[in-house]
Length: 406
Image 1 (cartoon, rainbow, N blue to C red):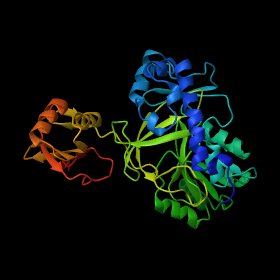
Image 2 (cartoon, rainbow, N blue to C red):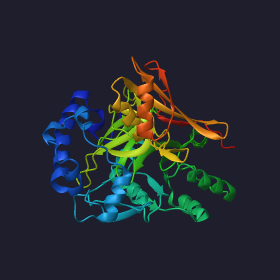
Image 3 (tube, rainbow, N blue to C red):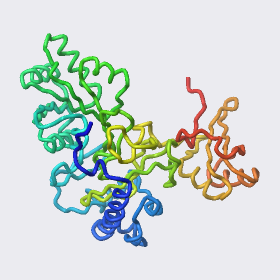
């Protein structure tokens, strides 16, 4: 597809690096100057020196639990927001409060709808919720950005949605992946023709290949995005359907879960996002989601970094012998021993008791010394197995629970 949302999507690597070198220090400076909570976290940071991913990786990771605690102490945004006069405030489970600014396409999802082929001659049936959480307005503003007409359907009342889709001549769907099938199946049962719907932009759930294929059989191209209420659009599919292209308004890192340490390209890790949104400058925000970098650029011609999409959750906290073991503790174990490259805790059952084995990729390591560190840091006894460097799976797991629960 040679039709792009803007020229940012096709920048060269040098152009994108130069833009990052200008925008990233400005965003860090904005956060330090105007967001008190970010200023406290970055008090010793010189914004002018944060010009690329390598420099960004020296900054602390912000986790949602920290954001929630700060909001409880200093509502509604915990000192992480810049703008004082937001257009909306939303609430996600937790509760976590998310702001929405007054600018056009504030969540940057217009880029995604454009990639799905939605344009000014389309009527979009927006089946995301319009209350409490921002998904409905996220796609409302995206449709406005591409000039499309919106039918703000929200969720439920499927029979009414079917009739409205037919009478309004709806050509595109926005919503969760599975609700479109419910609408189409209901239409079939009612004898209503919805064949004008040829495009779908979905999010908020897994788009399984079988479901995408079923939509394709109906003449509907269904593409998905990866977006959150905190960060807006993070990545999106194009018609090439080879991974997800990172949005131009964020910087994405893939790190070992529980740490801020980057993994090798292609290895599964936790998605860390820095947004360039000046109203809400979340720096190195941990999504808790797993993904991996997909090497190369998309065949569609968009040149930004690609990820493989959502690959599960990064929070692997596990209870062993009544004690919680967290990814952060495993990361601390690795940091305590320069000879350790990578570690993996494996939880087993020995008779009717839990047991723990810690596999470490290391060279010239002392097993007994590492076992002492395991006891000190994980507060449990566990056997240590020294592994060859590069031998542990590259699946993003740092805690693997092999106990049987059935």
